[in-house]
Image 1 (cartoon, rainbow, N blue to C red):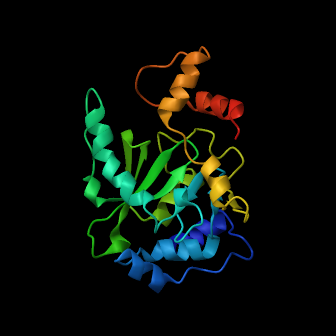
Image 2 (cartoon, one colour):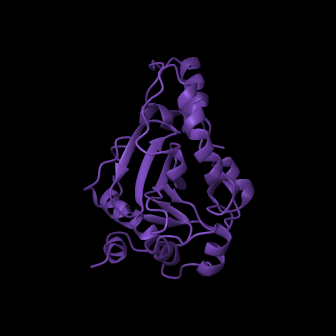
Length: 227
């Protein structure tokens, strides 16, 4: 059984997914080939969120926040070292920023990256996850689809993901035309941890100066700031 078959058995895709991108055109614009599993994954599912939490970047998305072929992935790669060096005690990086390419994001602002090594063999690329370009980092030795099978199947635990991620089981919610519009996705874009920390401090939450913001605090912020 392929990883995609395992994923679709675990988490059924839409009965009628949107038309698949023209992959040859996408890869020509990108300047390199994409992992075959990613192309099959996007073709099967289209845009949407896994467990209401994980969003994969899509080619030519109407939202700049999740556009695989837009400027955001390269911008994030350039910011990784800037954020690290700005910290009082810079943390070690498990991968060189030049080998990281953002291809997903969570509702908590965790970024999913391909580790693009070897560059000429994308089907061997693995996955790295981190929190808002900061520490900690989580590395997964396998493809993106295998990563999703592990996370949604409960066999792969990503420390920065909420513990109750699977409380409603593995699900995929397709994006509606409205939720993929530039206006709506801009409102739904991941918020910086600094914004949440400032709100938490002002509202009596006791947080450490650094480190991951607890999930319940993030949820409280979202409840008070729904738009």
